Image 1 (tube, rainbow, N blue to C red):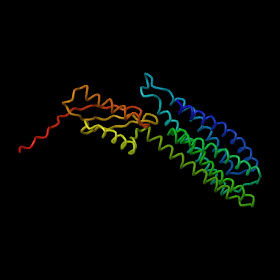
Image 2 (image 1 turned 120 degrees about the vertical axis):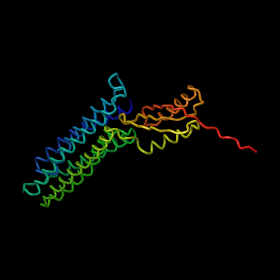
Image 3 (image 1 turned 30 degrees about the horizontal axis):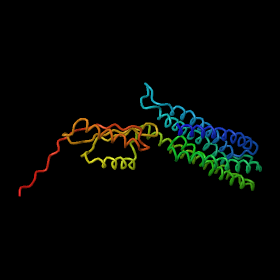
Amino acid sequence: MERFLAVKKASILGIIGNIFLLIIKTIVAFLTNSQAMMSDALNSTGDIISSFMTYVGNKIASKGPDEDHNLGHGKAEYIFSMLISLTMIVLSIKMIYSSIKSLFVSYSYHFSAYLIIVCVVTIIIKVLLFCYTNSLAKKYDNLLIKANSYDHRNDCILTSLNLIAAIIGQFGITYIDGVVGLILSLWITITGVRIFKESYDVLMDKGLDEETKKQIDEIIKKYPEITKTNHFNSTPIGYQYQISLTIFVDGNLSTFESHEIANALEKEITKLDEVYLAVIHVNPIQIKKKKRKRK
């Protein structure tokens, strides 16, 4: 529950911060006819949508299991992350078109000190939001908030480029404004594709990472009664996984004894942060006893 409350708070802060930035960026973009600032304003529109999707996706993902969704609603986190990535890609394509057009079509660029002020204010707000969301992303391994964190980080870098374009534009070199707008757009596209891939991997049931598999193997090795394992499967359930595998034990053990081993193993594997549920099947096998050598 703490995980979902933290993401909820971060998404609300993101919505408020980006609405404020959208307003001041749009006003200054129209006053100065800056393509880079207009692209930045459009990016803030995408950020508002992203933060809203983060809020909705997090709210759905926080719901526990029910009769129709036995394993909960965790995958909503990745569905909405994918929607965020698609929004970023669509907006960035529009921005790429506008930026390229500005390189070939002459337009009147009006330098204003407000361009500098807006850029500085944006960078300060985005740095604060990035530090906050990045800490949450690392703590809770949440792709929704990770996507927001990427957004804030990219905005810090790209608004810095926008600031450079605004300063250079003061000297009549207006094509730099379009170039920066193009760089900003391409950066957003790459980030959107990256988030899309991460979401796609989970929704298409990509298996558990190798590091966690090794941790599970180390846990299994603690049980000398287990001679071997197979049929290891992992299915993502939100940010965690359902694990299933078959263990082979001595067939001479009683049913109770063999299942006690499985139950203990399930409990220990489930303690891993990445594991939501562990299901272990017991397969008894005949173990040949070593013959003693005659003297």
